[in-house]
Image (cartoon, rainbow, N blue to C red):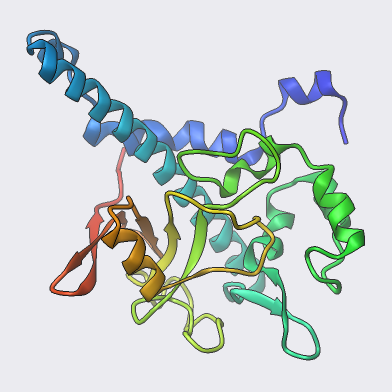
Length: 246
């Protein structure tokens, strides 16, 4: 690991990618200052809150966009997306897909993880606990953890429109074959560790949305896009925003 001085000057791949994408991801929701200045006091407060909310949402979209970018790099290298979880010889889930893409994130301290042991084994836990929170932020949403433990808001989607099989968690095909399939879901709250083999089902998403939670998603391939999940006529509806273009 590098020293603290060197770390302060170094940005991890997620931060670098986010800086290059967040501008175009946030373009549709920029509040025009001239309009805000002429609004009344109450409307101004609402506008400012809305702008802050949209800024956080844009940040979340950039994290989803980055995660898809890394998953597609994995696919290019292995010929397939990773399964949702890695299982031991008895079929028990021991690692998440998020562990399988770590080599593409260049987090040096996590290269020593033993994927033959459960993610929270004594050996792996010592490594995990030594990783700074900043190195986990690729997996967070609009509210990254400020204190340990690290959590992830980015979950693989298990449902009829997913790119992953519901029963096995294996990919149905490539992102090129299924560009409009739902790849990832971002939930507003989570206590799931990034390496924990837990994702989210259709029913779980529906419950969060029904409570008023802001659930976002991204599709497997361009130019389909990302957007917001709602409930319409009792079923989940994925409202796709087109991919940003330069």
